[in-house]
Image 1 (tube, rainbow, N blue to C red):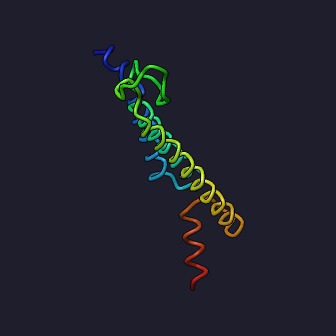
Image 2: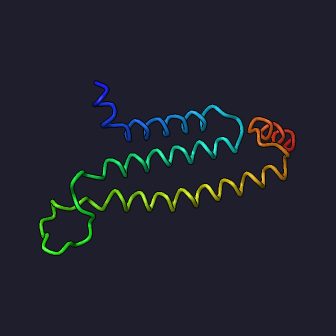
Length: 124
């Protein structure tokens, strides 16, 4: 039983990262912690895709001399998805951090409930 757990350790780690990030995103009031949770969720998804896209004993998806069978290579699609996801994730994180800085400059708080209350008071 324990041997089977260690063979899927990368998948369990990916699920744990995603779960911790999701909990932070939903339950914490601090905007910075929400951004960290979002990044952890991203990392969990990238780890999952990268670990399940790899097949033991296969070659990198670069043509090797004398190997013409496509079954000898690892599928390059998961690696491409991970790289694209990283670029998009970094961009979204940068936008979120920029908006958080602007919110802090205006409302002097990172607590989402305090910011919402100050916005309600401004509207009256």
